[in-house]
Every structure is written in structure tokens, then in C-alpha cells.
Length: 156
Image (cartoon, rainbow, N blue to C red; front, side):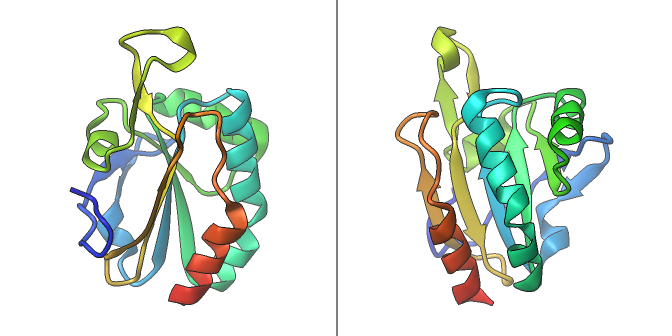
């Protein structure tokens, strides 16, 4: 599972270029996993752009951001291009990572039976331990960005 103070389960997901990205390859850095329901949906656009705009802070703190959704690599690539998102957007198209991290939302936009990533943030320290976990009550709720940055600062 993926509870606080536990080792984060490793995963491999495809990025926008369909290359495998492993969580374990970022050992030694603080990792912010930002789960989002779908590219090109209002709140997701705002969230990813807010994280994009905080990248200098994250970089200064030896931290990286990985965006994770069930969108295809192609949709994520267009999303990254449109909003000039420079961090990796990963495709959890089989929903395994979202399920492992308890980040599944059912019925987005009234589509009953459609499972997507819920909006959530998991922060993993440089040793691979989960130090922060936030899950939206519903996908329309954004995370507290200053709280995320403060948590990352506390781990650097």
C-alpha cells in the first residue's frame, strides 16, 4: 500500500515520449507525485500550471514533480506542450499505480464506471518513504500548494 511513513511502492510508467520512468530512479531526491483526473479539464489545467510555476522552488530543494493520470502518453504530450509543463507527465493507462496509491476516482464528469486518477499529492523523501499524503474529497478541489512547498522544504 501507500501509507504515511511506509516505503513508496516502486513503479514504471510511460512518459510523453513513451519511455519508461521508474520511481526508484529518483532515489536521493524528494519526489512530489501529483495525481490528476484528466488533461484539458479545468481544475487539472490549473493544478499542473500551479506546479509548473513552482518548479524553481522544487529544483532549489532537490525535488522533482511527477504528474500521473490515466491519460495516454499522446494526450499528456499535448497537455504538456499546450501549457509548457517541463516536469514528467506519466501515463497510468492501466490504472495500477493509481490503485496502488489509493488514488482512483469513479464516475468523473458523470461517466459512471469510468475510473481515473483522483486529485491527490504524495510526497516521498530521498530515502523513498512517504512523508505526505493528500487526497481531494472530489476532483474539483485543488491541493494547498504552499503546504506542498513547505513540506518539501522540511525534507530538504
